[in-house]
Picture 1: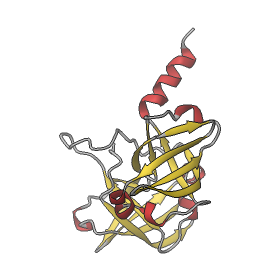
Picture 2 (picture 1 turned 60 degrees about the vertical axis):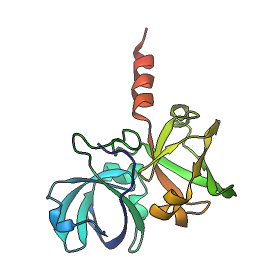
Picture 3 (picture 1 turned 120 degrees about the vertical axis):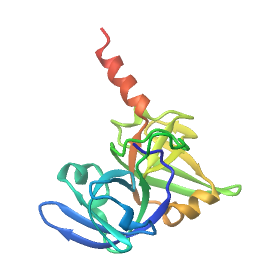
Picture 4 (picture 1 turned 45 degrees about the horizontal axis):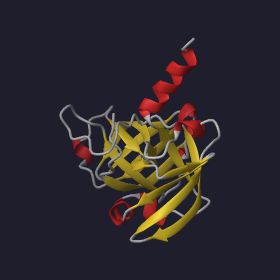
Length: 196
């Protein structure tokens, strides 16, 4: 369980493709304090640390994760939003994020708006009904409030702090991001489908 508050932007150090995709991610975290088996959200995807080295940790990515995320596109140098899993009693600064990516959105527009930056996204049609104005989404693991929704497009405002402390500062139209819909929206929709 995570909150969508990014605590480091790491970078992919090594990529090894095999039956599983192995990604070694350089980070400012104290990697020697990361226990093997620890869950770390890597640009929104909850992954398991399978080995650590000074300044980096390695995770393995399954076929299921590759089909739902952008991780298969990562290469050496790709910036990665990182968040360690919550401990009981930690502050919930964003919203409850599972690290289970639902799909991929595409950046349609990026434009200045006052001192922030407005991003507009195009979501997969099957996920668009789960996105609501003033609701929450996680994009590449970042907890965000939705400003407006029109069909399968939605917009968010990114403040300077978030631009500086996540991968949003370098993102441009046409790029793709991992989307996790709101946990509550997911369960409400399932309950409504089962109601007679």
